[in-house]
Length: 406
Image (cartoon, rainbow, N blue to C red; front, side, top):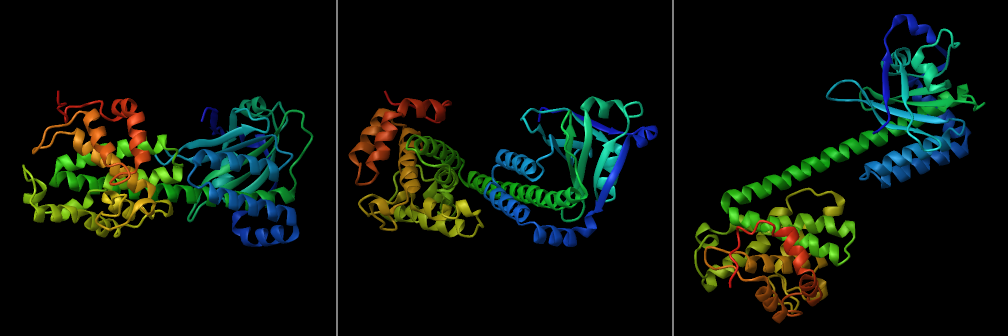
């Protein structure tokens, strides 16, 4: 946020700089909201649209801030400036989330200690005006505020910020007692939006930490498998981007690719870490990791966009001819699973293992080409061939894990 926020004035002699014209207690919100929305269909419709559009954008912080700004100026057409500040959890001070004028620039923000106390500590929505210029504080005069309206952003337990609308310059508009009711209700909806966004971010952090813990646990069993999973993720995402996958397809691809080998937790160490070729029985045990992967990942609660991660990860060894572990053919295999299958095979072959040397990328592509549309999706193989140099540069910057054959 580039706008400046002037800390609240603390000089007691300046308390008279602000004259409160109207006020409303947040404690009266239920009655205020019922009266307002019942009496004004246009406002009720506006608030309903605000709720719907912000709910759809809860993952996108920038979009949320834009929506809050746009709907604020729609709800209060006389306002020329908007500032929304919240308490900083680290410092305890106030930091701006939004500071903008109707024209779109980012103005400086002047806050009054009188207002901050009344709004935050007393839970009051207020309309105020500045005093005459000879008695007004410099910060308020400089900002050019004629009249302003301010309300608390109240979460589940306490106020955590304020929203303030100003009328500045030569604008002849004003705020009325009805506007106090309106901003009380609107600020409540804004607070819910911000609270929901915060909770969503916390849930995502919790989910990401679960993923990190799973990958770390795999690294304790077999560091090679864990680093392989990271490279498979990176190759898969590179392929997904070049194949034109949408964001909603890329996110489960990223997570599933990282977790595709989690089932190897259930494979005996003497099989998983065997420095040589596997017997038929051992190979069968190794291939059981796909089913084990799904069993492990099914135990995690996923955000809605990631609900298919267990299946996508488990199907990474399915073959186009239907001969994979789950016997799922061709286009019935999720596109993300088909991408991971190619990325998995490529990295396994291009990387050195205790039981084999690394193959040069060109030889690996030849092997994949032989299995196109039988084992692997031919379109994805072609994408890897076309963009090999870019993908190698992006993913295999440090090739210490490979030893290229001559």
